[in-house]
Amino acid sequence: MGDALVDMNTGEYAMVKELLGQDETVQLETIEHRLGGASLFHPAHVFATNYGIIIVRRNILGFHSDYKIIRYDSITDVKIDRGPLFCRIHFSLLGEQEDSESDMKWIVGLPYKDALDLVHLVNKMEQKPVQEVPAPSTE
View 1 (cartoon, rainbow, N blue to C red):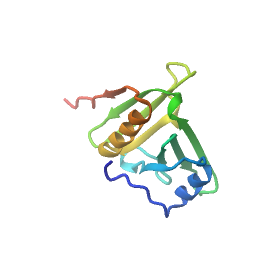
View 2 (view 1 turned 135 degrees about the vertical axis):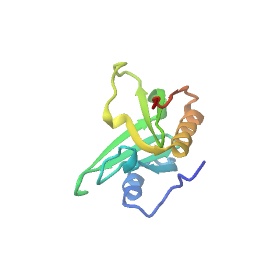
View 3 (view 1 turned 120 degrees about the horizontal axis):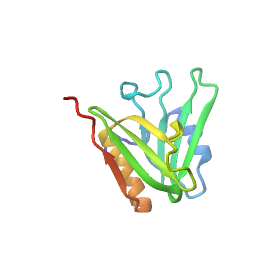
View 4 (view 1 turned 45 degrees about the vertical axis):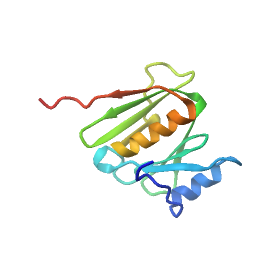
């Protein structure tokens, strides 16, 4: 894994720790970057565990948080949309409409190395294919 280490001293980690199952451990953490299109005030924290992915999004004042828990066995496809500086990752899930691209399943503003680390972990856990979309041409 790259630089996306787990910081156990954040408030987000404390919240996620309460959600973990008995044998579940956090393997990787990454944070959306504002320059890559993430929320200005509270970019999402993404935690990959040995069972799935937990995305934590806080609201502006931090009084409310949204959690999206995606289990590896429900992921049917992972798409990386690679831009010039940052990437977006989208997870397609079992039982959803094929054209569903809910914002809650997009992780935006990730450095390419962090995006690859996350996708490699998903692949390792479920052996799923990854579809990489090249950056749009600037010509």
